[in-house]
Structure formats: C-alpha cells, structure tokens
Length: 276
Image 1 (tube, rainbow, N blue to C red):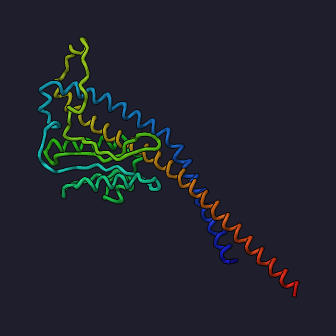
Image 2: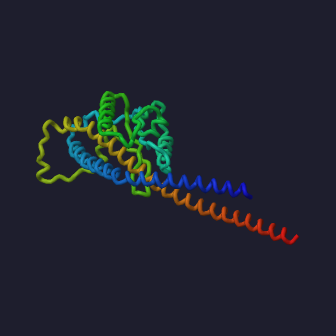
Image 3: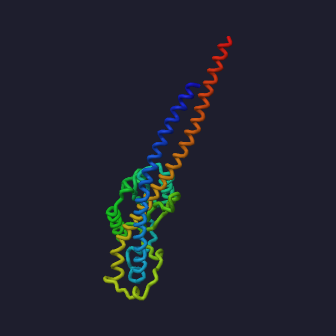
C-alpha cells in the first residue's frame, strides 16, 4: 500500500508539471493570436483588392493570350504545402498531411514545403512558417511564374489551413496557376471607371502584375495558416489543461483514500495489539 501511495504522489507531481507546461504554451499562443490575426487580415485584404484588379484586366480579350491563363491537360504539379513549425496544436498538422495524402498526387509532383513540420515530412523547403517573409514569397512566386510560362509544369496549388474562427480551422486547397480569372467576381463598372485607358495594354499590365499577385497569394495563405496554428494550439492547450486538472483531482482522491486506508489499518492493528 505504501508503494502505491508513493506512485500516486509521483504521478500527481508529474501531471502537475505538465499542467504548468500547457499553461505556459497556452499563454504564448494567446500572445501571438492578435498579431497573427492582424497579419492575416491585412494579407487577405490585399488579395481582395488584387482579385478585383485581375477581374477588371481579364475582361479585355487580349489578356486571354497571357501565358498565365493557358489551360493544360498535363498533370505536372507543383504543390506548396504549409504546415506548422511545432506540434501540440491538436489536429492542425495532421489535417494538412491527410489532405495531401488524399489528393492522389501524380508521381512527378514537386512538393514545396513551408514550415518545419512540412519540411521534416517532405524534404528541403522554407523552414519557418511564422517567420516566412514577403521577400521569400516574392522569390518563390517569381520562380513559379517563370517556370510555368516556360512550360516546366502545368499546375500549381497550395495546401494550407482556412481560419474560420478561434475554435475552428480546416485544410483547404487553393489553385494558383493557371490563373482562373472567372473565379473572381466581375466588379460593376461606374461611368468614370468604364472610361479608363490602360498604359501599357491590359495584357502587359496583367503579365507584370501576376508574379506580385502570386507572391501575395502565397503570403496570405501562410499568414492564415499561422493564425490557424496558434489558435489551434491555444485550444489544444486549454483542453489539455482541463484534462490535467481533472486527472490531478482524480489521483488526489485516490491518494487520500489510500492514505485513509493505511491509517485505518494502523489504528486497527494498534487496537488489536492493545487487546492482547
């Protein structure tokens, strides 16, 4: 019985130590949530304006000849996979990897990982999702656009995480290239806007703008994924903390009962001994 009490005491101390760890990780995640959400909102706001600009430009028939709008039956795919830098974020990373697995990718698919967990799984890439910069996105977008225009691959997509709210995030797949201008809602022109004259032509502006648009799309998906990661970690740590507290309460009750049993047994033995 004494050995059982010792094990219970060690177990309680161990879980209590884990509880302090989950609290610390939850606080760190909480401190990052506001900044991550602001970065996500700023990036998504830019994409909304850029989508409108692309929609206006692609109304011109000459833009249909852009190499970035070409359709292809080819299966050569470049896939950007954005996962977290750390674990302990609920199903955040597993959701991304499960989505990639379920896509049934062609054998020659080139995966470009962003985030330590993605790099660990798929090989060399951009190590940090949290510290991923616009300069890195611009460099990646420039290479993707050059290679796509040269016909080195047929499609490019991003697997990332959509931020719904603090409690809910889900994996999503976004097509980057070829550009699908019909996906953007055509803005209604006013009389003044209808008289715009583009210099140089709409097609030249479109082709020069696409690399910036792709870079902005990549950074937006990274920012949204990071906001999803810290939110998922905050929720996971809160849940882990509640479970740890419940386990400590249960073990403490078991410990008290075991101690009471030992005390009762000792009193019984003393009483029995005095009767002899």
